[in-house]
Length: 321
Image 1 (cartoon, rainbow, N blue to C red):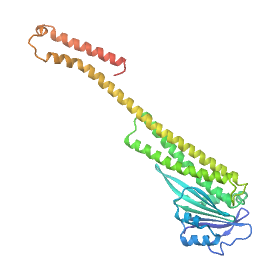
Image 2 (image 1 turned 90 degrees about the vertical axis):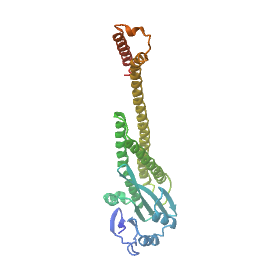
Image 3 (image 1 turned 180 degrees about the vertical axis):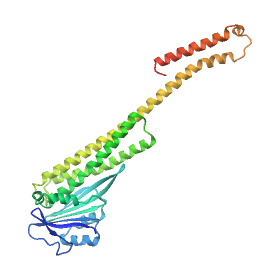
Image 4 (image 1 turned 45 degrees about the vertical axis):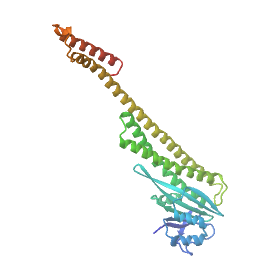
């Protein structure tokens, strides 16, 4: 059943259930509806379209999904698209929540979102003084609920980024680490594409004179905009950290290769001495006076040892070894 909840409220309190029939959706003075749907069928949604005269363009968007966050005004009706997010491993899975707001109704439609509004509804019903504001306050509650879901995601990504930063400093990033680094960066870029329009929607609700949004409720949307802005700022900072992690990893790798290259060059210079001497005496010339000298062999070996020790000490002092 796609109808998660459908109730009539008055003075901030739940009055009765509201089945999706013409009689069930009839309202008395001072009453308003909050209907929650999850991926509704065309038949179920048709009842609401006829009863509340929902705008065809908004209906098309609500049934199609795959929309960017936005705010549309159709006469005395507001249509808001918000993007939900959920972390799964190193990936972020997205859903959508579409909200129709009228003078005496709120209709929320979830697509691909695993977070139901059951907890939110119970929380709002526990505060009748706030809920009595009507549909605009419920809209704030829904948007605040969605944006609050962003915070655990950015917290989890931040922990992973800091962990990778420590790995890069302690050792060297493997191919799997680098692949994960770029995966996290891609997810943050996609996340930022959601956060920007969501902040824009919140700012419009806060600052514009819109139908169905009371002036007393507008300051509440400032809080939502601040939360989105804070998450967006943290996402931008994490993208910068990931870039610096990659750069530091490259610098450390270049430093390691430089150290190895210097060591190889130093040992090559040390080994070049006995190789050169052995090469000279291996040419088998007939007239080499020292060949008949009694101390020629130990003298040459001693010279090789002295030169090699001198080179070794020199390279040690210059930290090539």
